[in-house]
Image 1 (cartoon, rainbow, N blue to C red):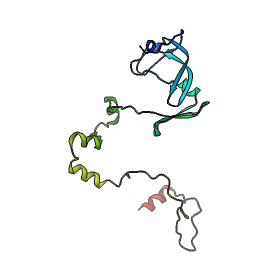
Image 2: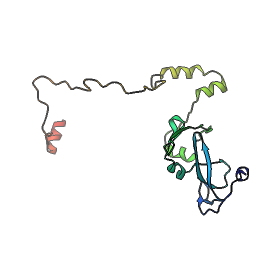
Image 3: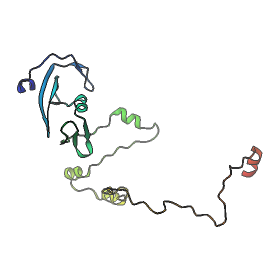
Image 4: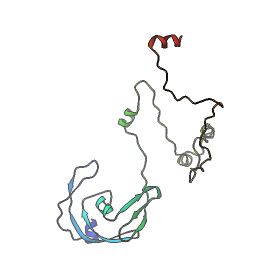
Length: 191
């Protein structure tokens, strides 16, 4: 559908593409020297065409290596350091519910111990079911010091003395190897 819509002219390709949880399939062809615009990046590239139902375009590792691209997930962007460096903001798609498989649960369980699973998304809970119950609020209040709301931007300043062990004046620290005892001496000492 996209090939016809974009009017791509395909040349024969011999590569195969393998996606997760599916068999490798041959590509339908290669569209050579196609003009590609991704955010601020504009350039020409070869597009391998393959039947997909999830995505319209995937920027593969070959493309990312060629354009010297760094993926920056913590700031939701790509940084392309090729001939024309640029930063491209990305849109994080909604991942949906995170499910725990039976195998993961089985692996995490110990035979004679009970297992509990609990996940909270408080903003979603409040929207879906109204205000948070008082018992939960009390529990959250009790343990609010465990994790700060926001982490500090930098480390605390270095102290003049990191640590110090106070010694009794005039004593020498032990600089000898520990005294070895025979088995009968050790038994006598433990009495």
